[in-house]
Image 1 (tube, each protein chain N blue to C red):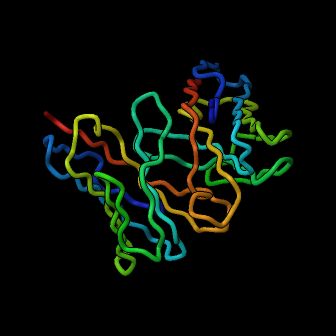
Image 2 (cartoon, helix red, strand yellow):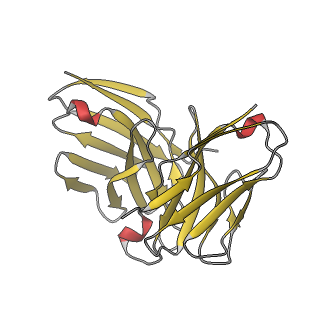
Image 3 (cartoon, one colour):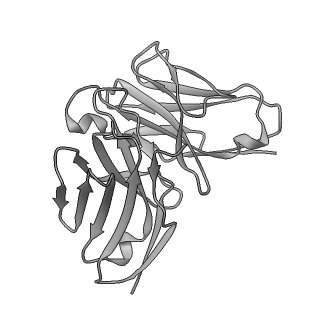
Amino acid sequence: NAGVTQTPKFRVLKTGQSMTLLCAQDMNHEYMYWYRQDPGMGLRLIHYSVGEGTTAKGEVPDGYNVSRLKKQNFLLGLESAAPSQTSVYFCASSYQGMGSGANVLTFGAGSRLTVL
Amino acid sequence: DQQVKQNSPSLSVQEGRISILNCDYTNSMFDYFLWYKKYPAEGPTFLISISSIKDKNEDGRFTVFLNKSAKHLSLHIVPSQPGDSAVYFCAATVIAETNALNFGKGTSLLVTP
């Protein structure tokens, strides 16, 4: 039972390079999220998706794009990486519903990105 | 502006004693609150939650208390164990919206033997 899997786990980029972080979940969850964690800042929502083919902006969306072509995958792209995007990125998913369990997000192990 | 606040960046407690982690929120629309635990190099894992219609929820050594009028919640860990040493994040959300969680900055708990 893999849960939420993020690839790659580590990546070093130069300013201006592009890359894509992949998130895959095997729980048949409708909702998926990308957060970033910075020292002293907690977790901040970048983008999220409430279903296949849909995406929406979160709290800190600038400099990122996302796609949800398949229900199980949520991709986070950096078109032109900047040092300010050095962070640890977490993907999460949850099921759709009204029950209290629907608000429990399951997180991946994180992807550490360094932009030089 | 941060809607969920954890004002204590760190807390140190002796093994066997009670750990109390605090959290305040500003958005009165929040109706569901969660605590997550995070070890280094791992993702956050769900610990315990509480609905706004309750004022207490207990799960083993972990109890969460909610004071809606004060917009305050707390996590009690009794007794504290060295394995509880981790960063604890408070989170809040509005049920039936996007399920997205608003997180506090976290409190690093160290339980010493």
